[in-house]
Image (cartoon, rainbow, N blue to C red):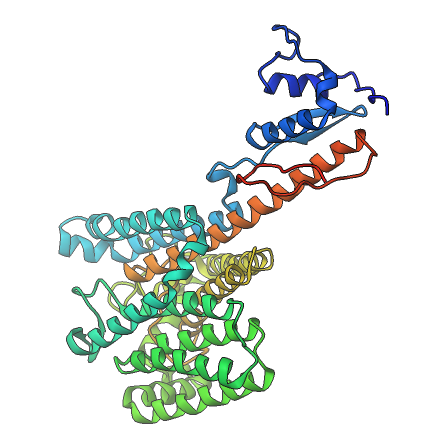
Length: 474
């Protein structure tokens, strides 16, 4: 078969190949003994593909049209999911503004300066958690799968330790190391990682009662039970809800899901009946549905903050409720401060950011390379959204009062750290999926280029012995 004629253009296919094999430069500045005929034999074609897998992308002109052809841009920042990263950064900025606005008066009394607490505590937490996010985004998420069991065992040990030697504050033991580490928040993270590894394994029989439903109940039940003994019903509820969503998405039997819902309801009733403070919160909540003046003090002050803020708010730093009236304005009640200083419109922007995060997270789950990555995205997205919904619902008297931080916005050390690590793992899932997608597109480009040779059929190359290498032609 005669050699096909190569199109004349700004840079021909032959000249590009010769240039990247070190024989000549485009434009002929350097002579080369190699001819275009060499490109059309099997050896030359294999050399071209190997060079293509290692060379920066170029624009190849053929058939009078330009199209990109080249390897994937493998730089770290180029493969990060920009929309998700932008959402997280916006939430962190809003959180930093609100933490400073909520603490400058107290910081001035405690640290001697209005920015003391903000700089020494909050910015430090943001910096460390951002470094953790980038680290976990850079490492392939599949690397951490092998540590899921050890992480579960460590978490159970930490939950037992906090019951024995934890810091006793407000009648509960929820933290270690002077309040800087809360095992309950680590447990929320651990449940997502462990369930993603287990439910995403090839041998998982999710629809089976004995090999799916029963082990799921045992693992989640042990974690939730230890958390309720602190007591911390809100964290236990977050663990149960997040685990239930992951179990459903993984393909659980519908009857098992219904049974799980009934079991959670029964356990919640028993726990509330045995805890006096929980009963009082439910009684206050039910009374507040008819008359807000009868609900608990915390919710009353939060509603008052929203009413003072109106549609547009009183302005950044101008909230009056945060000065003594509103409990924990920089943590659990920070959404009420947002409502007072930025109004309903400002609060709606925050809600919209969480909605955007949910959409982006579930979209990433759909495009994940494997089930483990998909369940990680589903789990971490659900975890963040459940926390945000509970916090906002408490501030608006939609659910009984409970202590849940607002993700990325509320002040916190361990709470911010574990959430940012979760986002880092989601970014890693997206990076792996993106590299695979672009590699597939590159193979298609090579196959289409092959149409000019031989019998003009498209060929997809087989994987070689080296990563990125292209194998022999079929």
